[in-house]
Image (cartoon, rainbow, N blue to C red; front, side):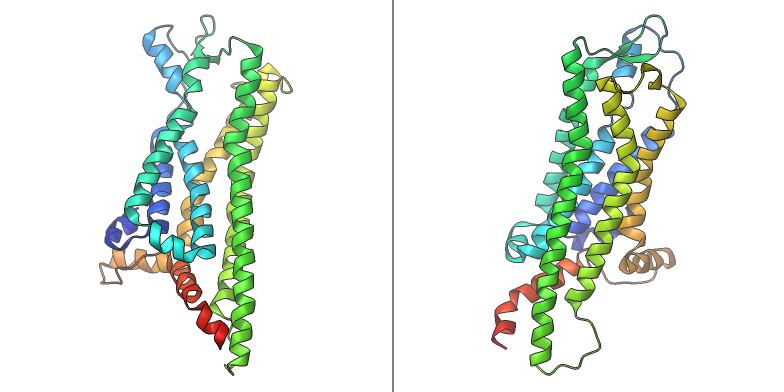
Length: 299
């Protein structure tokens, strides 16, 4: 967050989205993960309010959809570079991040309706009022947290890899016909391999972290998992595993990029560095080469 803030004047859409993702994960790590669950909740207005906002999943939902937005943004940047350059800027992306937070708030509002304080156990419980309501919310939450994000990330990243593969074949042919010395892989080949690796890591970690929790939550609400699962040690482990995704995002989107490591070193040593975008260099290069594609075809 500090590195991206330092370079905010030169930030483009990818840097802005990753900064928003880092902010959502930071809020999760600071305000949600360290806060223990109350062992006894009073049957009062404050108790009801605590249960309705406790573990509502707002920041996790925002983080998930910002992660999904990065995949869509990269797809547009690689496949439609001219449209991307005309329409994607820091101001519009910042407004989109605000919209993601607003939609995240709306998506978790059902928690204010179904959560309440149990008069006997003095713990937070779910009261769906109607069995059909529980089934609807179960499928709704599973679709919101697993189906939509995973399908979006998988499809967009596959299309990115496919497009980069086509570009790699095209420019490989141009290099051969132009008599360029071989032995050095083109930018598109390197970018294709990098995107494929990133696709695998992002999707694999997200599915590993969140699928056990969401499948168990779906099964619990559909009656496939016994009622004793709620507040059990297994549930706590699965919730902890889900939160690990917020811990993994900074590593995936920051530590793996050599440009970011160099920027961190410059910040720590207070040395002067390039005030340029960090995470958008591949997209910028892809746009430049796509803009010059008719010339390459004529060669």
